[in-house]
Length: 262
Image: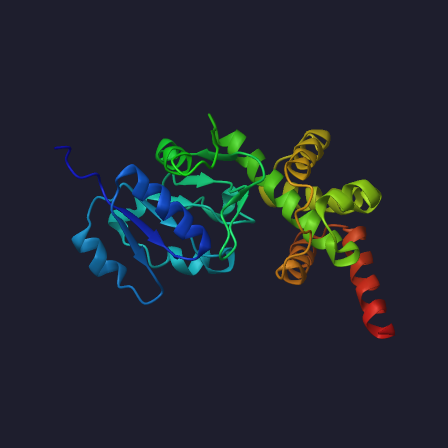
């Protein structure tokens, strides 16, 4: 009989955490879900050597979740949040980071847009777990590649959400019928991402990668419920870095005019 595989801890057991849990269970790993009310210190005394500790809370809860992590688990952390950049986990000791490119809504199977890139010590485990439930994952070789992929995901999310406040509709419609607006918003987002990482990127490579994601699901809705908050957050970052973001400010004015006339 094979010995029992090391347990997996999942902090945040919403749609995304539940999807990963199913994959880990398919591989034979016991899964221990943790909520806001779970005493992680007590759990860490019982499970001292987990295979991985997946932080599956939303991006707004990430930093508070990290403050609760017992020291004995810190070397096994994996992150999956949107709007991640290296500065968000620079204080951690080599976490595994996956840029998730599948959508999971209640009552529906996971919908893959493109393969999800992953980097870090537990990359293979995440690759195998999602592969066990037919979600493709792409293994990365370097931190530099990971940073680029995180910027691509941020570019996709922020461009579609913020431009979508004006256009609504799908990513296919945005690119095919409102490409000028999409490019202007994307330029502002790239300006922000470069300031926040301290690195410059090939703009064409970023745009091309974003368009590949558009092509992966042309019916993906642009504007989620987080779109207004993402716009406010982007403007706050621009103000902190003293960056010109003309397209974003123009969208704010258009939204204000629309509200005033309604």
